Length: 238
Image 1: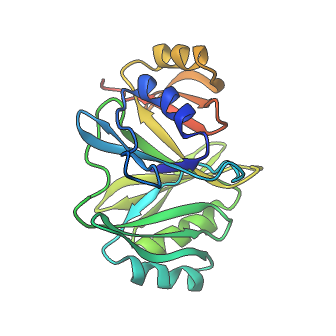
Image 2 (image 1 turned 180 degrees about the horizontal axis):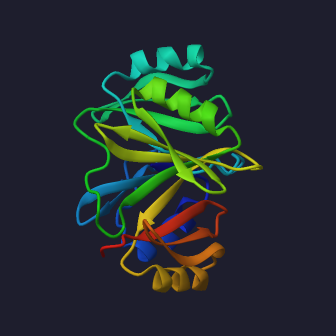
């Protein structure tokens, strides 16, 4: 999961205290890419784009064994290749694509840097969810592209699919009637959703979904001061 925008410093000032992240761009890195860590383990990345570049949604990256082979299937499955496989020197190999509905996603082939290094702790990614008007088409696309099992949830009034790997749910797809741009949104795990919402509001965020209990934990939805959508979650057993 990463994001690229011109107001990198503003974003770091918002998320680092909110989620307990640390990690500033290396002085010698002209791209100013900043890997965000919790307890010394990578959980996200924040990069830099030119001032006139549009604000981009968070980009979810999916781990694959062979980026080039996966990229080669995107077009035949109805998606679009945005960035063909290329090396991140000394780190790994990556590619970018768009699904049939236009949602952007990334692919990551691990090198010395594996990508996410920790899960299930405050500040880490709790869940990744696609918001789209084309739920079934998107579920079929990602299932075929990633070799994931697709399972539709039976929930009244909601069309939802999960992507499973090895029988374990890894991401979700939510079908909505309308969305400006189909996009993947992150859920970040926190110790206390209500306290974290209050802290986010005090630093310029706004609430889209008030904190509420769900079968999957207590959750809330927000828009950060830059305009990015994200959600907060505390597991039900926390």
